[in-house]
Length: 375
Image (cartoon, rainbow, N blue to C red; front, side, top):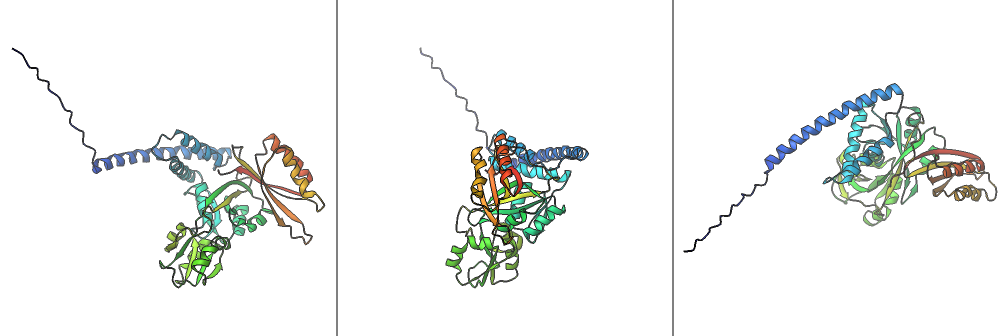
């Protein structure tokens, strides 16, 4: 007689996926933990501020911010994207710095300018923003000490240098300690969400130039009115239904305007460089990094071959020049100042040697600053 063996299979019940309510409970718990840790960090930051106060060292150190963010970037395991982690940490450090010593930063106003956006990108959202009517006031506020730092536009990838900033750099006691490169998107803003019956478009002259092809095609009969800043154009457009402005999404939110057309600049890759300035006693020249730029203003005697001779020390010592601009000296003698950017830091022997030789050739020589450049 055969015996049949019966095999019993045990089935493990499937674990149900957590529902939305339980996931939200988890998130609430993690948020509380994060808040506790952030406040612990803030308490330590306050102690750091007391030490800096006793020692007389700068409260804001952009090189230290860069080091911390770079370290966080390397340690990020995901799934958060590294640029988002960097942005979060910059805001955390900005909020903690505001407890140590709030940083007053002068920018071109009103609220909503790309200049303000550049300042927030560099200093974080906790910076105390001081709005100025023009770049002259930004330089004055920074040089007088009413603001610790200033942010000014220096160059656009389409329209070239901001000439007023170059002229102001000539006589200011401030120096450049950092830069911000922004991808600039100009939007058409107005009270109503329509292109109809627009009589005038208001913006900074450079923005009008950067959008001239679009404006000629879509608003050929609208007057183009230059104003001190794009955000000022947005502010004015909010007062007149027949006016439109070229400005940022931030300005649209600030002044309650519709974005009638997005990103209308003629060149898709439209970037503007902003310089971060301060007095030397506020922040000294940053230490060398992997990517540094040294900016100079020089002039040479008006004689044959003088400009050529100016470039020889750079070639001789292997120093790369990334910008060369000329501006009239306004002496009536057809003399010029030359604005030069070179790669490298003066602490590097080849850069130091090149600058020493260069200075000996110049009738006027001024280092505007040495600072890390954005990739």
